[in-house]
Length: 181
Image (cartoon, rainbow, N blue to C red; front, side, top):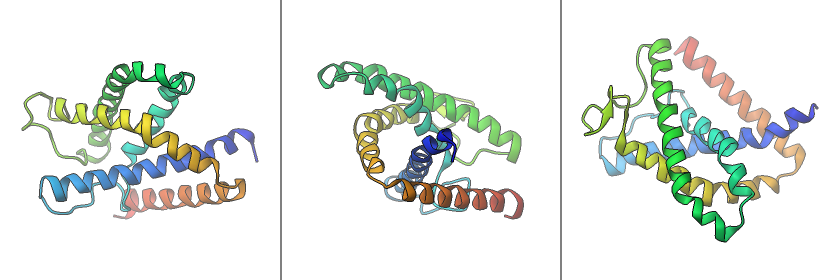
């Protein structure tokens, strides 16, 4: 197998894990915090929200290399810039995704933010942007290093099998959602 394809296997797991994590977070907010009741918070049929997976990959590819090269005492000096970068990146991703989803499906799959004090066209708002910044910082400093260590312990053959199954599952779900549902 091509070395570039082999190098992508952990990123498939990262994408899937954070898409699951994002779906769980959204459902938790909806059911426990806001008490709206349950609904599938993802665009796809399954319990995952791809925008969180893509956001995590962007954070990993753009922000994580700097954090990896920085020693731990000095790493804490980057918390505020990391928070701000996560906030801007996630908000930009949400804005672009809202336009893309509206263009392709006629709407975007999350609530509008028109009731929030500071919002832009109901597509993005300050309050969720702050949460994205906090979540991204927690993700980069806490969750991702642990997850990378866990993924690093998976044997190559299992990493390949898991990646293929995840790509297959997401592909079938995407095709089902777009063409059948």
